[in-house]
Structures are given as C-alpha cells and as structure tokens.
Image (cartoon, rainbow, N blue to C red; front, side, top):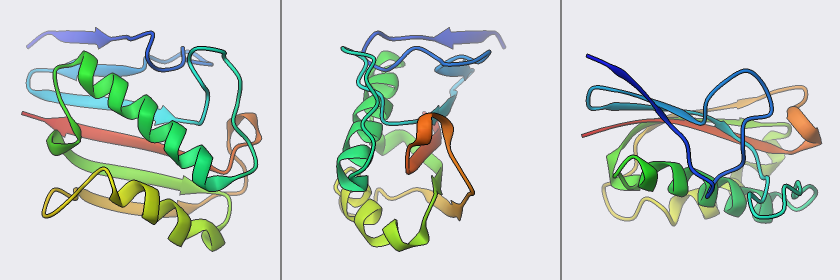
Length: 127
C-alpha cells in the first residue's frame, strides 16, 4: 500500500513537522486539530464551545478532502486543558455523530495545548 498525504486549504496548515492527515489504504489518520480558522490563520481561544466548533469544522474539511465524512470515523482522541469543559465539548462533538455513528474515543486532560487553546482532537477514519 502507498501512503498518501492529505492536505486541504479548508483546515489550518500544520504548525510543526507533520501533515494534516495520512491515508494508508482505506485508513485515514488525522493529526490533532486545534481551533485555528484556516481562512485567517487566527486562533480561537477562550470559549471552549466556539473552539470545539472550529476544531470539528477543520476535521470535517480534512475528512472531505479524503472523500470521507464523520460517519467514517472509527476512533477519536480529545485533549482538554480542563475536564470542567467535558460537557461543553461533548455537546458540540455529539452533533457530528447522530444516532449510532459515534466512534470509539478517549478524552484526556493535559497541562497545556499548542497556541494556548483549550481543546485538540485527532481522528482515525476508514472505509
């Protein structure tokens, strides 16, 4: 199988030595997305609900570039700087996975995230 780099202007450019996503066969591995608006390059910091909405938009754009949707997501990892934000993040995240489409997942509290944001989400999807 060949490794294919997935890159879209609909999601922010990487801020380090990594790719937005790598497709390997029928599997898609999406790097952690933070709430950066790809149109402006500005970071959305402060309101975790707005941050999560931007993160999910970024993830959706990457999935679309690979010809996938949230229905293809098998696993996600959510990183939060405060577990106090868990319910707010869940509320936004859940709107992307209606019915029985929710993937396997873990949520982890971390000390800090890039650019001072409150949430980062990575995903694995497949066909």
